Length: 119
Ligand SMILES: [Zn+2]
Ligand SMILES: [Zn+2]
Figure 1 (tube, rainbow, N blue to C red):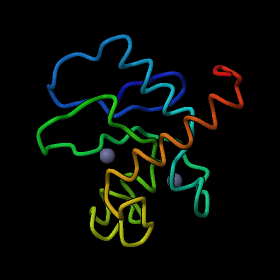
Figure 2 (figure 1 turned 45 degrees about the vertical axis):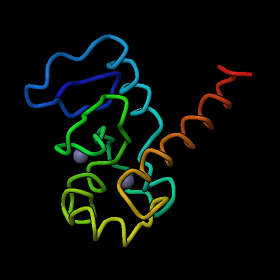
Figure 3 (figure 1 turned 30 degrees about the vertical axis):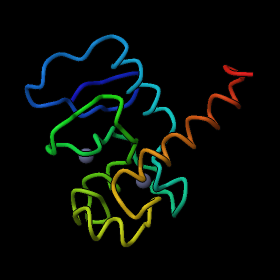
Figure 4 (figure 1 turned 135 degrees about the vertical axis):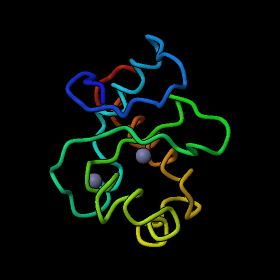
């Protein structure tokens, strides 16, 4: 685990080093808060950065979504219950793991708008 701007970011297993811009993006995403907590009962737990489509070929530090410890690795979490059960329960867009990227984009847009980073 790598401490990044106050949030824990899961380190890849030997996929090469994280560049400055990748680290910046993952830190930014971690600031958004868990995408499931924002839409369901919040757990108040710290956030980790989940890599979408891990192990299925292309792995990118830009294909990530923030999940709290419970919604990431806990019994109510993606890795705890598995992709199928997770998507059936929380119904991200498309009822697929990639829907987490859409939730992340929504939350990032709201964050940047509130911060007035973008007009
Ligand atoms: Zn959560
Ligand atoms: Zn994960």
